[in-house]
Image 1 (cartoon, rainbow, N blue to C red):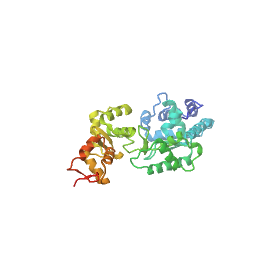
Image 2: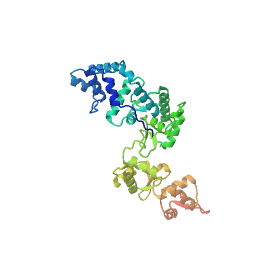
Image 3: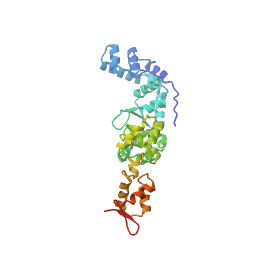
Image 4: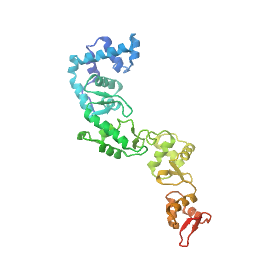
Length: 345
C-alpha cells in the first residue's frame, strides 16, 4: 500500500499563507475550514450569526480572503508545498475520492482540514462534487480522470443487476474498459482506488463486487447475509448452521427461528432436506421427493433407477432408500419391461 509522508507541516503553511489577512478574514477562513485548534468546520449561517452579518456577507469575506492569498508573495513562496500535494495525488491515481485522499495526506482531522484548505485554495486542484454516480473527488490529471469516469460508467452498464464478481474479475473487467491510460496508473492499488470512486458499483462484506443497489452488495437483513453465507460455503446448509455462520462472519445476531423464517419466505432459497436449504440457482428443486422424481422424469423421459437417483440427489438431500421407496408406488410411477421408470398415467 502506498504511503505518503508530507515534508511540510500543514498548520505552519496555513499560518504563513494567512498572516497578511485582516483579522476577521483570517477568522472566517479558520471557522469555514476548521483551521482552529478544535478543528470544527462551521457553516456560513453559523459564522454569520456570530458576527451579526448575513450568510452572503460571510461568503464574500471568504472569497476575498482566498483571492487575497492567491495574490500574495506567501502564495508563491509555498509553491513547493502545493507541488508536493500535486505529486501525491498523481501517485494515488490522479483522481481520488476526497475522504480517501485526506486520510492518506493527514493523520488527524486537524491536519486533514488544513490539506483541504490548500486543495480549495490552489487552482491546480479541481474538485468534482458528488453526483448520482460518483463520490466527491479531487483531480489533477483531467485527461486520465475523464477516461476513468467513462470506464466506470461502461463497467456499470456491462454488469448484470444481481451478478457478483470476484475482485480479480472486476479489476480485469475494469482494465478492459480503460483506454489509453498511462502504464504507471495500471496497478491493482490504483485500480481499486478508482473503483471506490463509484457510488453505483460496490463491494459486499465478502469482497465480491457488483451493482451497489443489489441486495447481494448492500445487505439489508438476515436473508441477504444468509445468501452470502451460502455463496461462501457453496453447499446446502441447515438453517441453524446458517444462523451461526452469520454471527461468526458478519458479527450479526441472527436468531435461529428468524433465520429459518427468512429462508422459507425468500425465493432465492429452496428446502432440499430436513432443515437443509440451498440456493435455487444451484438447480435444486422444492417439493417432496415424489415431486422431484416426477420433475426429473418429465424432463428426461424414462430412466433407470440408478440415473433417477443420481439426478434426484443433484436436486435434493435425501437417502437413496427414500427415492427407491417412492419409485415403488404404482400410483405415481410405472416400471417398464426394460427396467426403466416413467410417470404413471
